[in-house]
Structures are given as C-alpha cells and as structure tokens.
Length: 310
Image 1 (cartoon, rainbow, N blue to C red):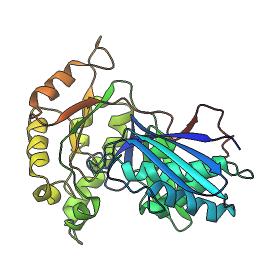
Image 2: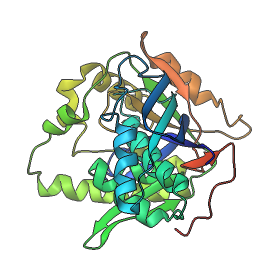
Image 3: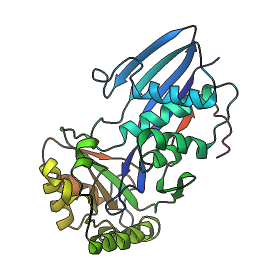
C-alpha cells in the first residue's frame, strides 16, 4: 500500500466578531505522510514542535488517525507518521485543528475501502476538536462559516475578495487555548450580543464583496477584551493597529494578531502598501507573515486524491 501525504493549512478563527463560527485558511502548512507498516508505530517530526511534541500514541495526529480508523472499521497492522510542520504551535493559528484534520483525512485516504466524504470528516474532526471554527476552513479552504445542528456540524465556504490580503503577526510567546477560553464570562450583556451579531453579518459581506468595510466589520465585544489580561502585548498591538485604521483582530485564541489588509488599485497582491504600514507598527520580537488565503484546504499531495463525495 503506497504512502499518503496530506497537506493541511493554518487557520485563523473568529475574525473578530464571529466567535466560534468564522474561520480563514492561510497559506502556511503542515505536511504529514502516513504509511502502513508490518507492525508498531513510528512517528517522526521536523519543523515546528519537532522537539516538544510526543512521538507516541498520544500525538494528536495519531489519535485522530486512530479515531477515524475506529469509525471506518479498519485497523492497519502498523503505522508510520512523518510530519513536516510549518504551522506555529500555541499561537492561535489552528495547529491542533490541522493535526486533527490531517489524521482523519490520512486514515480516510489510506483505508482501502473508504472514500472521502467531507461532511463525515467534518463531523468527526469537530467531535475531536470540540468546535468547528478552525477545522472547517482547514478542511474546506477559503473562508468558512460553521454552525451546529441536532444532526451535527455544518459549514459553508465563502469566496474571499481578491483585494483582501491576510497578514499574521506572530509573537515569540505562546498561549494555551484552554487558558484563553477560561477567561470568558458565562453571560454577556444583550447589547453586546446584538452588536456582535450585526458585525458578524457585516463581516460576511465585507470579506466577499466590500473590503472597505472590514474595519467596522471586525469590531468585537464578546471575547478579545475579556482575554486581554492573558496577552497584554497582543491587546496593546491590536489597539494600535485599529487606531491606525487597520482591520486587526486576535487570531483565534491568540496571542497572534491577524490583519486583513486591503490591496489598493494597482498594488501587488502579495505586498500592498498596507503591509508596510502594519510592519511599521509591529514591535520587535514579532514576525510579520503575509499569508494568502489557502483555497484548497486539506488535500493529498504527491499523488492523486480519492474522489470526494462531500
């Protein structure tokens, strides 16, 4: 059985007001190769997390692979996993979602009697990750809106306007998603909920058709200020960028910052003037990464993928 190589993108969730329901796939990737062996487990890693992540059954990619095998009713005699990680860990760029999606897609592609069904994959990866806001764009690519129903999670893909250029500002520090979620209150004022509902609706329009509205569309009252105490440097940078007119938000649970820069007439898609402005406002110790929207999502590389029925 030939090995399968799966490429999965980084993601940024929430995008300001659309807490736990909007996400964006970014052109920064993990590539994971899966191969059936005669027995045992081998895990090899290069890149991000190379010396920090476990190399046994507790590795998140392996756990997701095993969970998918249970659903598929298929268990290979042995497994080799080789990961080349490009997604920063613990920075609010969806590294755990990428690991979960890679494991489930890898098992589905390797299983001799399975065909990839993105609806079924979304259900399983959401169950493993806990919510669909990162796994949906990682799986489908582009910008996504996700929600849950009694029958399970759903997601739709939105076409991002070509003038929207994502820029991610990545600090040296990390922040646990669990810690960040623990700072959120159980109850929020009705006015704040209404404010975010309006901004979330505007966000979908701004991302797809009217990038000039992104500054207003990315305003939030539900989660960013509430988490500021855990990442004061992020909060300070966010305020400075927005005061200068940039559509900046906390990327996922942080501490990275996502800036949705708008390309002006005649400007290059990869380096509009707004990128220079953002870089000039970013403190030392942070990296400035222009990461275009990843339009493919999770895909098999180095070989033809199975036909998707999703």
